[in-house]
Image (cartoon, rainbow, N blue to C red; front, side, top):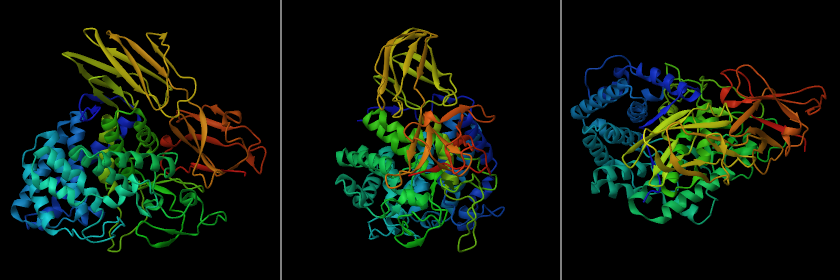
Length: 599
């Protein structure tokens, strides 16, 4: 049924660069987490001998990211071959199993959130590492969940802020997956219980008056619809996620691809994106108050204009992968591209004590990248080792899995991080190497490695923004072919060892307004890269033709930099402003992603 297949975290290698550095740093940090600390909550439940004090923050209040860490270790092992990751994953899974054998409470204590994450982690170990005990673990977890979870919970998706039923609508994805991997009817029956008909039916009807809902988990629920489609073949599930992709990307995202100010999606107020990034004192806000994802009225402050970036990236990475595979359409790589470069790609490293940049700041009055969170839970627990410390490892493991797909029609290149991939054409092995340092370099360069000449098609995704003068050459000879945004550029021929492909998608400057209700508030984008200004500014310039008054400069530490010409910074004619790639801006340096224009 799938049009394309991903490489299941194998046969793809990242080359040195920003994204590989992010991944390698995370691996070393997570390998240093003591097994005893990760297993501490389960051993406590099982009354088994325990060492240490466990991890603090969210993890200490319920080990909510244990399953995600297991899955990340398994996937990161496949993409890197680092045996330490596999060994750690199996040690932790064995340790959890010992706790389960000692006490049923280890399975019985999990509400919907932890159940979902544990299912995902153990299924990853079963599918990717061949870890057989995981079958018994997911069966025990599911039987317990079937007996305990509240099947009468209100099904409209308003966020439950406490209790056992938080984000119940994300459950079907992993339960359908358990059915696909094991064939056991238990899972198919239980998955159908949790289908999110309220949301999916509204999408099918084109009714986007959904009301304020939790952002990350609602995009994440679309992966449940994708798995429901794969399992049942009901076309309505696929249509729902296709509609959701377009609606959310077109009307509910920032320039970075991030979404969910204050973690809220589909807010009732028109212009909520624009309002979210304006300062609390701005007189032109459309709404003074804000209805949050729990449907409560809140007083706005300057923290609203943000994105829960690690979690939101993970939900989009999964959704776009499902859509690429199920439809084969190139355009579905666009949202992943935005967040790959400007979302999780801009994250600073997670610290050894579990601090992570939870929110990416898009405020018009400035932001900082910082792993200091500044929030305290009612019980006194900090925001260390929280949900993003479970999703960011999944993000960096997914980097390699986002790049390439394959089918009988050849190889499909969706994202352009420096990398190489090995694939088969019949009984012949071929390796395609991306030797460029895209997006630091604008020209893409690929080299074919084939001991025996092979005839196949290579397909390259043309980004939606590539509307300028685009070119493609093979062995330095220009190829006359149409290069259309949001489609595949297809090159089919007999490929020989050392054949070179160069592709140039023209990078042009453009301003993207935050939304249609605040057209005077915009971010500067260059090709796929969101640029941030060095100072808060009111600009007087032609938004439609920024190249007329913004010119490139050289700036140490940045791949690209730009400066305005004098006469465009209000109210002083002599001032200028500079712009740098958001993802390259270091921690604790002020930046201004969105700027105002004179009306």
